[in-house]
Length: 221
Ligand code: PRT
Ligand code: MG
Image (cartoon, rainbow, N blue to C red; front, side):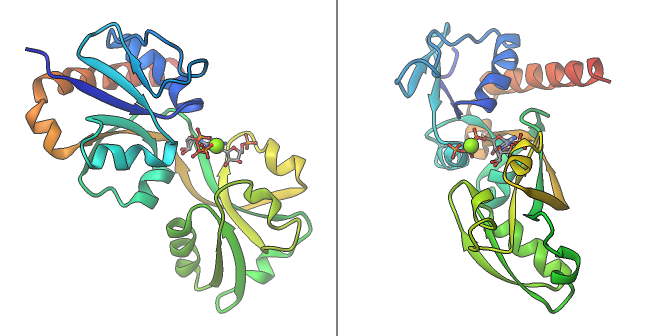
């Protein structure tokens, strides 16, 4: 018998880039979450449903078993701490970089010498604290929930730690990336206990995601 499966996804880039993986596994949403206001989306399989949650909430739904598995960015997973989660696969989707950025013309090299003190605004406190601790730079961390790019422009912070993909947002706001912290992509996250209980339903999907990811990567070489 096929187990009931709930898959947690966020709208936007992760959903778009996950659709081809789901399709390869024969899973098709019956509604488009970008157009529907529904948070539970049925699929062509009676036993499989998608739940649409905030990107940073995906690990929490999976951790507590409210979703069996989900897809989340490495940025979100580092901040969440990964408790109770098995991360079997890097899907190489929603790729970007975690960077330090400052206002153009700000002398970051001088301001980030060991022993210096910097005001850093970010949505990613764990990543920022670890990065600057490794450099021996003290930081006053200012936690924001979005639009970090504004902080250096209005004097809230000297630097931001944020995700960059095309670089257009930094450019449009007269900012520049000055340090690369870590490459980010999205991963499959599975509840550890659920994987054991529903192994025969979940593992074949993981295998298809792995094959499809591998094929996509080889085709893009
Ligand atoms: O938007 P919301 O507050 O609901 O949540 P979210 O921002 O966490 O979700 P979403 O859907 O925007 O991002 C989901 C995941 O996509 C993130 O957790 C990352 O792993 C990944 N990802 C990939 C990105 C980007 N690229 C990205 N460019 N997430 C955010 N951005 C933002 C970035 O923060 C910056 O504001 O896009 C802007 C920069 O983009 P460029 O192209 O101008 O450089
Ligand atoms: Mg966003």
